[in-house]
Amino acid sequence: MSSVAEKLAPEAIKKLIPYQSARRIGGAGRIWLNANELEQPIDYVAGQGQYHRYPDFMPSEVAKAYQSYSEIKSPVLAVRGADEAIDLLIRTFCQPGKDNIVVCTPTYAMYEFCAEALSVATLPVPLLGDEFELNVEGVISAAKVANVVFLCSPNNPTGNVLARKDIERILEATRDDTLVVVDEAYIEFDWQQSVADLVLDYPNLVVIRTLSKAFGLASVRCGFIIADDSVMNYVMKLIPPYPMPDSSSEIVLKALSEQGIAQMREATHQLIARRDWFAEQVTGFAWIETVYASATNFVLLRTKPGIKLFDYLLSHGIVTRDQGHELALANCVRITIGSQASMQDVLEAMNNYSVSNTNEHNESKGIVK
Figure 1 (spheres, helix red, strand yellow):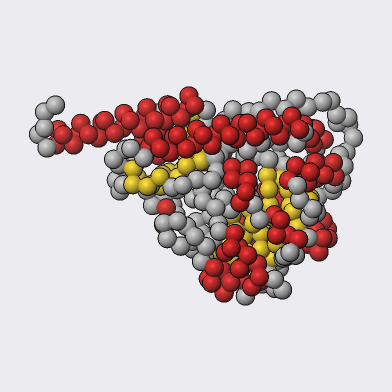
Figure 2: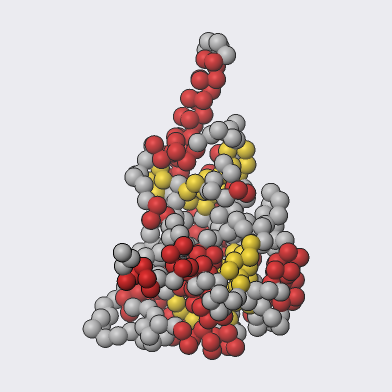
């Protein structure tokens, strides 16, 4: 006999596979480099709020502070993380069972997940080549039967920036018919590549930002939508009554203060240097096929076939992200850049793996060292 819940749940929800977040997948380990978090937190000291009161229905002070930090003139809306921004945009502009979104795979899985939860179809347009470039004509063609196009730049999990000229071509071609959402969650790691300034020229452009990455505030849940008023007017119809708790707002305002921004920029500068150093080090392993250029706080590695890097690191207490479920990312592992000590541990483990493989190879060939 079926339960009431089973009777009432829509087919789309019954078929939905839960999003496999880093925390949901879990795993035992001592070093966590699988969620693209900031491993070394920045100390933003918050004040004491009046927590018995409901927060502002729209955290306007937070939005103003972010607008000042970003040096943009377009409207800004604070939301509970970039994930809520994605969900809000799909719910606002797509009708269940009728409309479509476009994604450029491999990319952040939450776009498709949110769409599937709402019975909105996803049209994938794969990125091109080893550089994971936009298939501009493919996106423009798919956009003709879609309401929203999602572009992630810098892209997760590949780490590369999408060419501004390609995004502009897509914006121009879709100006009158389709929203183009550019997810800039990692933009602090390559600030000059932002396209947020284009919102003034293209009302169909929406930019998503977050404080979870470079600012190191993943648990605070603060993201932003940057868009034209014509978009904001509809999104704000669906925003929850109290979208951000005061405790989070206090921390965010500290992070967006002059001192907080300076701390973030210094931490980001150090992380980028550590990322580039790590990428250079791992390039030397013979069983590493490709170390992809990164404009993020992670590095994507492709090993040669048969190398079980994810499993090996996990056996040594180092939790990374296996990307092998994506056909285009076979034999790929994504490693978040943590502290210097953490990255040294990763390199030591990889070096031991390399030595072990070499010894096994020599023994199989009858070579005595």
